[in-house]
Amino acid sequence: MQYIQVTFSFVGIEEYQKDLLIAELADIGFNTFEDTPGGFAAFIDQAGFDETRLRSEMLQFDGDFEYQYAITEIAAENWNEEWEKNFEPLIIDDQCYVRATFHQPQPQYAYEIVIDPKMAFGTGHHQTTTMMMEYILAADVTGKTVLDMGCGTGILAILAAKRGAGPLVAIDNDEVCYLSTLENSELNNITNIAALCGGKEAIPDTSFDVIFANINRNILLDQISNYSKVLKAGGSIFFSGFYESPDLDMIRRECGSFGIRYIDHKKNGEWVAARFKKD
Image (cartoon, rainbow, N blue to C red; front, side, top):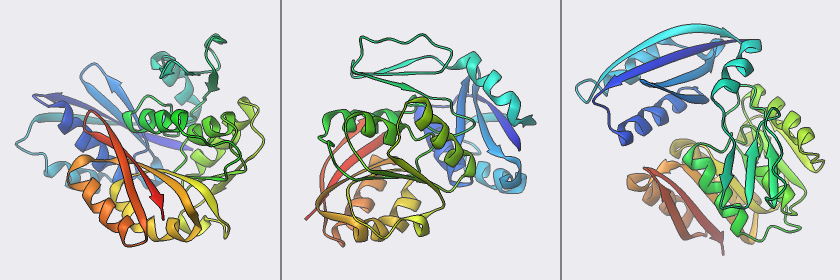
């Protein structure tokens, strides 16, 4: 599979503006982002790339900051080489150590996760994934059934499995993410994650104690009704991939219409993760 790399460089951009741009790019199919000295690189599979749509998205930022971007094709087999140059291990709450296969183990941490992204979003470095992992580390998931929507590399489901959850279902509409979840489950010796490729239609007709959904505001709003059907009474749902204003209030209202009650949220930069409970 071929991928498109769009490398952005900026003058006068604020951090929150960069986050907004990343969110807009994610909405049109970009699924991996990598910081560069002058900005960041965004990746999308070639079949899903539409340069006209990219130009249209960029128009809303005209006048806010100066930008340039360059488009290049990148073969999938070259992705890991590029990624390895920039990936650094990650420590979450002094409990979880996230590393790649080429890093040395660190057995002093309670949980170690080995991730090979294969162009899939979710190494733990993005604020949304980090906050979701913090929630998982603080939650009691032992023996709980879990649904991970928009699973990316499968990192959230893997962490939950290492904390005793199971069985788990991990769903992503990107085949690369689906395959990445299978591979990363094997790398971490996790055998109780069922990975599925699809969207909300792939959610199995069963019930779950816990749902993770780290996607974006529009998809979350569209899928909350589906989550409500499979979330057990008293079950918890954790959302991320959106901003505090106006996104959080929109999600709270939609959840409230399905008897899903807001508990709390955390913020990292401009990004928010929130916890809800079904009454």
